[in-house]
Image 1 (tube, rainbow, N blue to C red):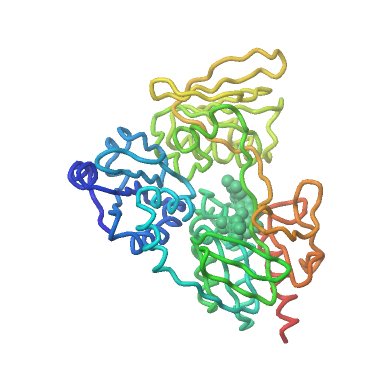
Image 2: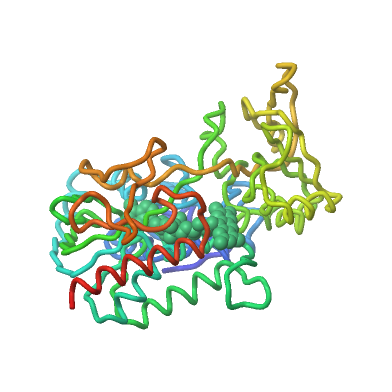
Length: 423
Ligand SMILES: Cc1cc2nc3c(=O)[nH]c(=O)nc-3n(C[C@H](O)[C@H](O)[C@H](O)COP(=O)(O)OP(=O)(O)OC[C@H]3O[C@@H](n4cnc5c(N)ncnc54)[C@H](O)[C@@H]3O)c2cc1C
């Protein structure tokens, strides 16, 4: 994979024919998740399309010129002109394929696809999701010598990977960077000998047949499945939100806060995540304005005390964002005062959103386990769902407290219960 700098942009990209350019950053979990997919795509399409990488931090001016404000971002060029819309954040293989195929003729697409082959593999247990819940289940199953595969559309680690500091995971005297915990946990799981299939597209899941198809071509058959797919941040459905996602609106402080040195930032939310991430953002930004719908923050006491002691942060209580727009490179958030119904404009350099989560069940096919009213899976004390041989662990299950420790506990329980059945 060729890496270029701004100096080579004209020669390699503008005069380079058909090109896909990856703006990546370091310490960026979504960039790491993209890398293996990008490499695999490059191998498949390289005779028709040139694949290039460029380091965003080292080529900031060019990135800004091209409107890249989030990592990773993929841009597609044909004869010096940008074709297709750019994609950024947690990029799926299918999103890339869709854009690449548009750059080729039907015959060329056919020739590329002809080089792909279908495979089938069999396991005792398939774990869907490599967050702390799935990884812990993997550690226990691997140590019990049960043939296990862990599947994740991203890199393993789940939310740990994007949490800047974890101060409540037992065993560490000092707060740990989340990505280190994620790294240690996934290395520990790998060392037990289980298979990892990460940074893949989940094509389909059939919980009754216990078959999972990844990247359209690989079928995985398992005797038991553990669902550990976690949750997804809620979006606000405010006008302009999807338009500016990755272009001024971010959902990951670890990934993007570093681009706001001495800048002003708006944070939406008022729970634990919002407060903790706002505190982290003040390491870079000069000013953080939080917008919160209630008249008090819902975070824990320690986090609130830290926030109150931080002079860079102010909170607009009982306000909600209604619309986002961009003017002269600044993000304008139109906020409504929920008491007076009066709207006003809040100008900042970027917006971060942390407003709760929904369960990742829509990826589990049509035969879903029983769920509570909010779409979280019901599991018994062995983490079994009502579907035969289907277990669920971590944030995706119906429970009161969602933490790394509780996810780890769920993974442990499911794995021990399963291991007993294979004895
Ligand atoms: C910003 C933030 C900060 C936090 N800070 C802390 C903290 O300091 N301390 C603490 O204890 N807790 C913290 N939490 C909560 C904690 O991270 C979660 O409770 C925990 O990560 C849940 O683990 P999980 O394995 O269930 O899910 P997740 O960590 O969400 O992992 C789910 C995994 O499933 C994968 N996945 C999604 N869809 C599919 C699919 N279709 N197939 C396969 N895999 C899929 C995802 O890519 C992901 O890797 C924080 C959460 C956030 C968001």
